[in-house]
Structures are given as structure tokens and as C-alpha cells.
Amino acid sequence: MHIDKDLVAASATPLVLGILAEGESYGYAIVKRVNELSGGRMQWTDGMLYPLLHRLERNGHVRASWGTSEAGRRRKHYAITESGLQALADRRAQWSVVADALRQVWETAAHPPFPGPAPAGGIA
Image (tube, rainbow, N blue to C red; front, side):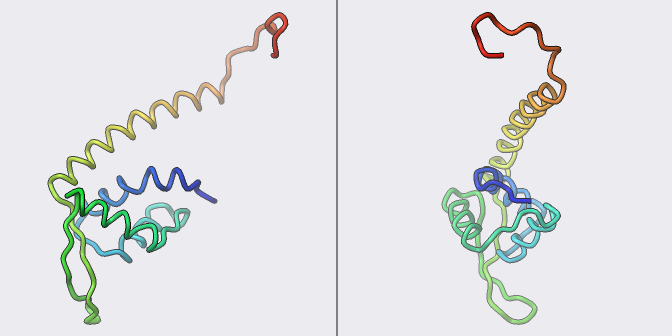
């Protein structure tokens, strides 16, 4: 299934903050976690993730530090900050409103009211 890029962009910040709220992580592991959470339906790339991580770092929502992998390779680790936890809570509240509105409109669309007569001179 293809996920529209607007939906990917809109969900990227809360996804990354939510993943980092689970614990410190690094780029490849974040991409892998998004893939896992979406059942393979969201395929993120480094080119999409790293600009987001850098923006979150500039905004004070994450902090970065250099670490070393088990294989001895240096990599940047990211951790959520208090500001990031607040941003995550704010995004969660916003998504709740959006999801509720979508649920209502989709329920109405799935069960439209019984159609009445067509308006005079209008399109039915």
C-alpha cells in the first residue's frame, strides 16, 4: 500500500518523538522501528529522517550524542528532551481531534442518510 507523502510528513514528528519516548535510538533503528510499527507499509529513507531529526534537535525536542555500536562503528544517538515530551503530548492531543473528526465523517460516509428527493433544479 502506498502512503501519501502528505500523511507521511504529517505523522513523522509524532512518530519519531514517540519512538524516542520509548528510549534513546539512532537513525537506522528509528527507520526500522517505523517499518515495524507500520507492518512494513511505511518505508522511510535516511533522506527523510535526518532532516527531521536535525529540526527536532534545533527546536530542542531531541538531543544528540555520539556513541559507538557493538561493531565499533560511531553513530549519532538521539534522545527525547522534556520539551520533546511536551511536543509529543501536544501532537497526541491534536491527532486525537483529527482522528475523531475523520472517524465521524467516515462513519457518516459508510452509512449515509436515506436520500430524499433531489433538490429542484439542482444536481442530486
